[in-house]
Image (cartoon, rainbow, N blue to C red; front, side, top):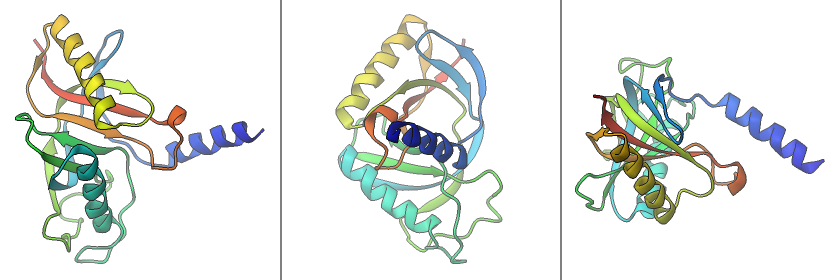
Length: 188
């Protein structure tokens, strides 16, 4: 009985949080090609390892959406939290929150923290690979490598930084967690 309530709560939670819209361009056996177009994100750059960057970045951007801004405005939480991994494998990670679709750059307040920025980002066309459980650095790299191999097998060119998208809060148990690897690609 408890498991049934947990599943219902999980489903209702997912329905109440906005996720970015995309157009499905092509579906492969293990991954999809999607076009996200342009999104508005609040982001911060953290020069630490993957885990520290994700936690520190989340805290900074969460401060912004929970009222740490010029209007003391609360901004609805969205999913996923996106950790962008630099192409040159430096320690710099960019942590993004996608802003709710009802906002534009004119309606969003300025962040109070100097290390948080809000901008339009062309996420564009990406290959998306879903995986469950915790999105640790080790597990994420495993799935990044799988997706990169699949892209190579299908002659799909990678054209940007890899992103790890985490859709769930820290209290969601591993069997119910949803994550994705997003890699910008060029369609032939």
